[in-house]
Image 1 (cartoon, one colour):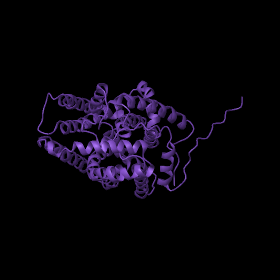
Image 2 (tube, helix red, strand yellow; image 1 turned 90 degrees about the vertical axis):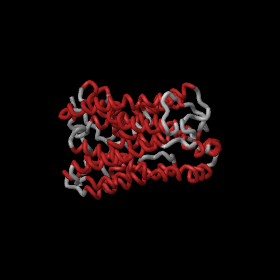
Image 3 (cartoon, helix red, strand yellow; image 1 turned 120 degrees about the vertical axis):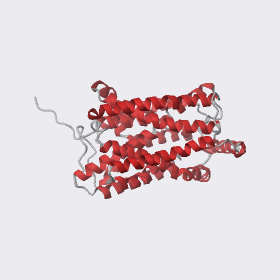
Image 4 (cartoon, helix red, strand yellow; image 1 turned 135 degrees about the vertical axis):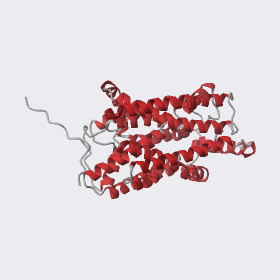
Length: 404
């Protein structure tokens, strides 16, 4: 079985860049949930004690960060699925069996991440949707796109209906939520490991598991769009598809302007819809996440078509090549900070943002250093070994200097 490392010439540089960019957005999105009981906070998602500057950070996140990056990762997962299956097929490897092992490993890691570290894990959701994705590999392009648009439109129509449902203040149990917020802060700061796990199993797990079917439905159409883009060669051969990418860029930009613009208008109360203000904002944050996802991806593809920008984005590419490792490392760092220093529920969004910047800079340096010595990130290597059911090379061989 051919398990040799992917050579630099075989790597798709722009795919690594987009992964790295998405990973930066992901840590910003996840930061509030690492440091605060967001599941139980008021719908605005602001910490219990916050400043006006925190409100501006939250607004900026809603407009340009929230929901904009898991969508990118979902698109990339679909693209990566096609590339994996296609390469395995070309090498005459048992691609379905290998893909099954690959997804099973992802699901296992995701569940461990979810249970023992953080309720916001996305890996197990990707694994569940990834099993469904296997059904589409042999389908015609037209069929795949029809399913993608059907699932996307149906879900967004549901969001539209939610906007039309009048708000019912009686459904809000603010007192109960406030009690859970204080309980969460106490447990995360001072509770024992067993108390922490008990709280999470009692209050966090049920919420996440109840929303799991919706999470799968949300990412699956994005998987299919990414799968289609890779099958058409749009990501691998960007130069051959510049005109189509430019059309996506302009279309997504034009659509994003009103959708993003609605968020501050709703926040300020200048526009009022039948649904509760927080619900209306959530819907528009989700809609703008789809259009800005397309805008961000097409922007990076266009920039990466120019050699000078490819060089400038090399740091993102290193992080993107170790996305699996770096994603989980972000959780480990933030859980360590919140538990060891007992700062859960007390860190401002501004401070949290600075921590993200420092952490990501560290990940850039670490990824660059690691990949100068090894072919894969540590978790990427384990994942590849288990996928191929074989130990693959990890350390790069040192080149011998010629004798003068």
